Length: 272
Ligand code: ADP
Ligand code: MG
Image 1 (tube, rainbow, N blue to C red):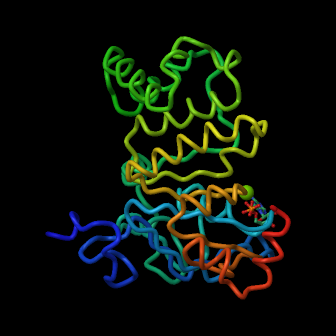
Image 2 (cartoon, rainbow, N blue to C red; image 1 turned 120 degrees about the vertical axis):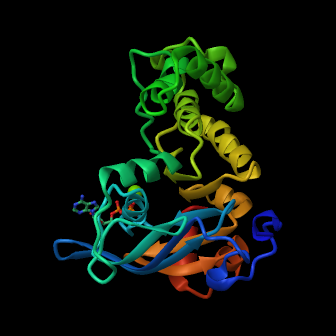
């Protein structure tokens, strides 16, 4: 009962989780193939509450597939994934159980995902884009949804753009609306798949700042990114994927500066 109030530095329970709390995500022995292409191999990963874990690695190393498995967009072949202790997805050597649609909806509610492409509705204003899901998924009435949407836009620094259509917003602003849309749903976990990769360089910073603010507020985040500065400064843990394996894992310092893994150093050179 005292676990939940422990500071986040007071780790040390089993599985590396703070004593008395269930990790937000546990991945154990995860394996996945597309045909004969083995895309994820024996992945183990624990994400504790309020942690930021950055996934880095070369293109094609399996980062997006891992996120998609965590978000139940993709089935896996071996091992297991638990979200807040609940087994999700299905695999051969854990109890094979497809979630019912109802269970899936419950889990989806708690996990939000931000993609490289913002996927805003072009015919809706920023405010309507954020409010829509609150009405459709949460069953809020329109006035409450609009009020909440406005708060969320404030949180990402876009209160002044509430009535703008996506075409009138910069890419960075559109991505911030997309983030506001996700946080409006109050997810327990947010997954980001290269959220700044589609942006012009001068717009990357404003999106990373919003993500930094979310992290500071205690949001649990798994972030696929090529922004090594963000990973170095914001991540609690960094996982380096290579050919479907986690080839290095640890604090940013451990991965970036102390790893003896030659593939990490080779990879980092391409980003500096
Ligand atoms: P990353 O995000 O690290 O660039 P991905 O997870 O997208 O890597 O891809 C990992 C590997 O899986 C690649 O070889 C890719 O071609 C393959 N892959 C990804 N999605 C599919 C799919 N839906 N069908 C077949 N192969 C896929
Ligand atoms: Mg990818």
